[in-house]
Image 1 (cartoon, helix red, strand yellow):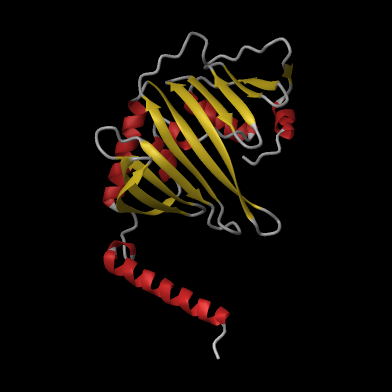
Image 2 (cartoon, helix red, strand yellow):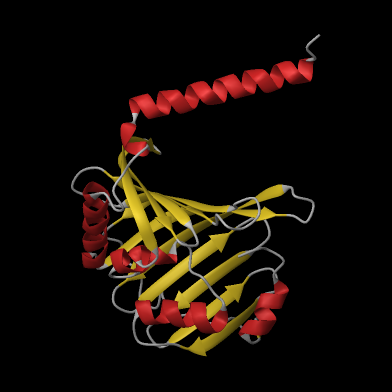
Length: 261
């Protein structure tokens, strides 16, 4: 006599097989695709060119970071961020989250990170462009800007560096906006991006999957409330500490936080 457990397993197998057959029948491109589909490559280049020509812009980035506990349980942390960028050498990002609240300032001369919970900040001289500052922060400070790969002038070159295959999955809707859905495979990570359809090819959603890590944790971000003509006030990108703030170095500031990157 069949047990309930075996019955559930059989149902799961049947549903999974039916879904696989349906996907293969309805979307044959998923079964066999060229290494990099021209449509996916073209759309990513178009997005990169469009972003690279923007002067001053801002957006809200609602990111989610997955963390795998030692018990095998997967936990998600949310980190909403409001960022404003002015090429070639200005960036400010305000991040709030479940375990941290941080503000990043870059004014073309210095890079400063302020952490609200300890009322402390760290600052260092920085390179002369946003791209160089992002590289410096990542390599020397272990500091990553939210959706930082999308802030480079040549985002295409940054994103495609490790890509071995790519495909175009058609139109989708993100936060009420029609988007082109692209999927890429890399040597160490897989990623997907949703690009707004029409004459504003802005990134609307971005997912990175660490496929060789246990549990394949993901980082995802939805980008919304784009403003392509903001007017930052004078001094908006420069950090001016209040008298009661404590200045520490970046290593100490990192130790203050209990939240994952």
